[in-house]
Length: 452
Ligand SMILES: Cc1cc2nc3c(=O)[nH]c(=O)nc-3n(C[C@H](O)[C@H](O)[C@H](O)COP(=O)(O)OP(=O)(O)OC[C@H]3O[C@@H](n4cnc5c(N)ncnc54)[C@H](O)[C@@H]3O)c2cc1C
Ligand SMILES: *[C@@H]1O[C@H](CO)[C@@H](O)[C@H](O)[C@H]1NC(C)=O
Ligand SMILES: *[C@@H]1O[C@H](CO)[C@@H](O)[C@H](O)[C@H]1NC(C)=O
Ligand SMILES: *[C@@H]1O[C@H](CO)[C@@H](O)[C@H](O)[C@H]1NC(C)=O
Ligand SMILES: *[C@@H]1O[C@H](CO)[C@@H](O)[C@H](O)[C@H]1NC(C)=O
Ligand SMILES: *[C@@H]1O[C@H](CO)[C@@H](O)[C@H](O)[C@H]1NC(C)=O
Image 1: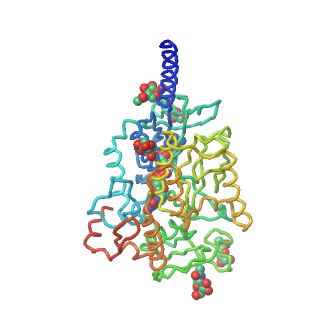
Image 2 (image 1 turned 135 degrees about the vertical axis):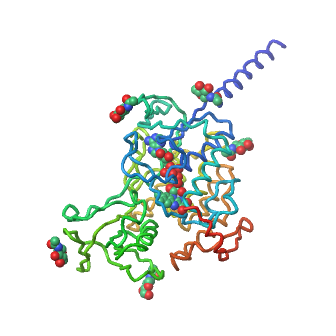
Image 3 (image 1 turned 30 degrees about the vertical axis):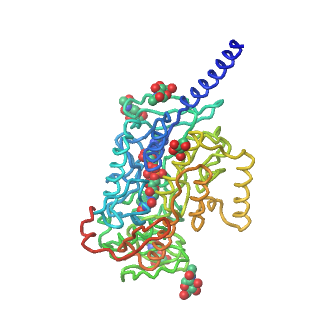
């Protein structure tokens, strides 16, 4: 009898041991040490999960690090950052904060890139994350072989390549680095200089010049006004249907889409012509994950990455998480929430629905977009669904929810932008509780302390 119990006990013990062994040896590869990678690292560490962050540059912070150079860096790698000298955040402080780590009180409501970059450095230090990051390790291939991810990366100091097996991959390589170039007829004739906003650094080269800015997204508007400060003439070509009520300066001229370039300028779709010295394409970016192999089951196109569950889980290989593919949202708190969700998934706190169910849900969304004649890129837009998204992913994963007040702040901030792009950053937003906030005009003295 006793012997029988002993045998059962031993078997039980073995099951427990092999289970804990399995749990302990799960290995996670995080690609990139921008906000996506840093937030992931923080939660993976807190949950005692074995992980490594591979970062191609020698810096954390991704696009938030300003680099005066353009083109390639000292390792021959394309410069990742799209940051420019005068950039201030386009969302107010509460929506730019990672969980339990507030931005310093003394900073203005919309901090400069420099202050925000310092914040990310302080975050990495506070959560003691740097030791998990392998800097100058550029991921060149991620392949699915059997039940593991084979991650190949090169160390840029020696050109040595490595390949390791991982159970999970969190892809946080950023989506604002690969320029979308519009390719307009006659570009090759044009004698002036054409750049993309990815390579825009400062307005000074445009002083007293006739500059064409193309596109009215966040970059087009922000860079347009930055350049309008010094330009002789700022020609803004776009087809946005937004009614901008901003009091643009007299040197600002709105034009429709471009018909073609010639040597000296641009002919627009309305037949009008403008002499132009320099062009800045603020035409957005392409999704670009060159290292993700087709064995991942993902279809990556310039404007869409599919199929994804919850805007992040690769449905065909659900041990791969694609971070930050949501559009029109508070990206920082969204990335933070996605990092919590990914960690809870890896920790085994919850399980995903069966593949067919995830696929069905995704297909339904895609069909609805296509039936309206909209492009596939709409699959990434959260917009008015943002708060619902936070509710759903938190409920499914048992992780902390991004409170509704974030979405409400973004909504009012968007209104303020439409009203006046010169003044929307003068407001200070204070969170009262999960649902309410107050807004007041910021004391101008605070802004004088801006750290440009
Ligand atoms: C000009 C500009 C202004 C912005 N302003 C705001 C704002 O005001 N508010 C806001 O919320 N968001 C803003 N954003 C969005 C911004 O992208 C997010 O805030 C956030 O930085 C995204 O973080 P990420 O980690 O996803 O990507 P990134 O910051 O781009 O970081 C990606 C990291 O991955 C690394 N990497 C890339 N490829 C590889 C590889 N093959 N192997 C290893 N490492 C690799 C890169 O070197 C980089 O460090 C702005 C973006 C831009 C470009
Ligand atoms: C993580 O896993 C690797 C490979 O199995 C191992 O070498 C390393 O010691 C592990 N780290 C921790 C902290 O368990
Ligand atoms: C690594 O490769 C690059 C480009 O191929 C080359 O320029 C560089 O010299 C190499 N570095 C080393 C240490 O071999
Ligand atoms: C913009 O203003 C015009 C004229 O006032 C109006 O017809 C149009 O509907 C407005 N568009 C939007 C998107 O509000
Ligand atoms: C470019 O086109 C405009 C408008 O047709 C014309 O006035 C101008 O002379 C052209 N420039 C050159 C160099 O042909
Ligand atoms: C997973 O569950 C454990 C136990 O309830 C909890 O301590 C941990 O915070 C959870 N992890 C995440 C990322 O939510």
